[in-house]
Length: 188
Image 1 (cartoon, rainbow, N blue to C red):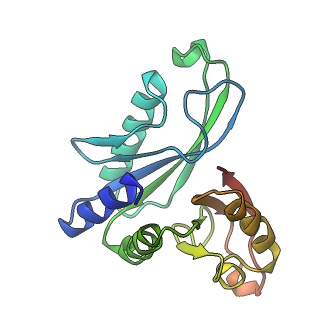
Image 2 (tube, one colour; image 1 turned 135 degrees about the vertical axis):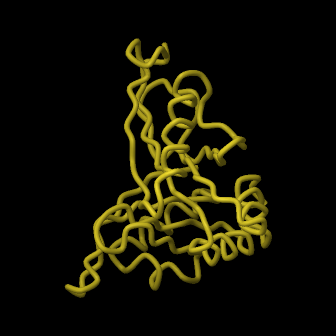
């Protein structure tokens, strides 16, 4: 099982709020590839999204989200240059997901899939009336979870070995009966 899943499970068991920070996308020279995770609590971090000033800034943002009550996930783009005190020169997009009791179901589902050894992924809604909604999928639940418009892409990620593929969906158009746009964020 991936360490970030077991960390989130343990934190939820003790009612400790956290923020899951994931490298959602990157371009150019970057310290960590898409799919890297870090769990941030009020006083600890678990994992890494790259170290240096990037990671310090990610921890600051995550801790601000811990103080804010019931905020949706958010994306932040970082240019890894002089303005951030980094020399990599690439660009990283991080997704910040507050994790508390309301997220227990997807964390439990993810832990079960991770323990089974099967490839799996998450669809995270970033914007709109469904912001914060997370659904876990594997090869058997792609159509239902991701919708037909995005199932093919999710299937490709899973087939390529993206054990923790991440699709970012925005916004939710459930009321209009249409599937929201989604874009790949993490690949193997």
